[in-house]
Length: 294
Image (cartoon, rainbow, N blue to C red; front, side, top):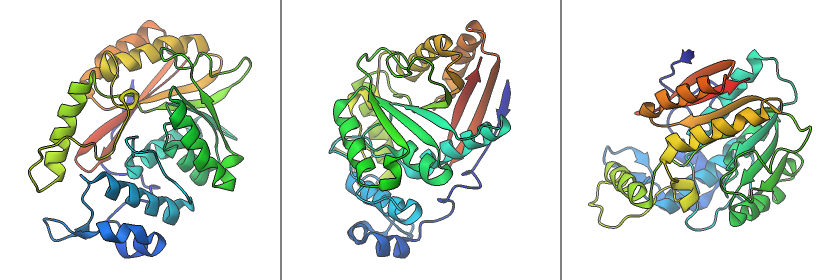
């Protein structure tokens, strides 16, 4: 199994280095009220503040990608854009290795934010299908698409009616995708998600944390599922075998390294012909993309 280790953002990632807050505020003035020196006397935002994170995302999307009228419903996942961009850039490298042309990508669990399709369209002019089990998420993503003309020509959305399925009911007969992407729910339960959030907030904030708030938000299906990330990915792999002729590359994020042995074992059991693991470094966090094909 090939493994490519990375310790920093992808070379093509537009978010390398420090944010230029003066420039971002000029593009999105609402960000200004959230910008102030942090405990290291560096100009930044409070990443424990969900509104601050959302307005930073708005500014980045306007400035770097020309996306306007981006918004998410209260309580929905507000993703860190640099890490999402990294995923897209690394799978672009993977697809270049197989000489893919006019890429068609399926984003499993696209969410209300629609971030992966937005970046994939604006950076590489790919075509996307975004699926989700949440009707509210699909409707909000459609609003974002409708507000940006270029996205409307490149992104289609499909509601997954069965929460146990990944590709069934989404991939149509005779439809072929170059690649699928997914950011799985990480936690096993709500309690587990809350504990993780408390740890994250304590690391991000200089003030004592008493109340659990999700700085990046998230609905239950976005944050946790039975068996957590490991079982989610295993189930996806098992179902992918049925769509071996419909997808050239399946991929998913895997946040926890301890989950890899069970994932690799499942890939061996389904007789995946190619397996690659791409490691990504974002600050102190190391994540990875597991990729397989038949």
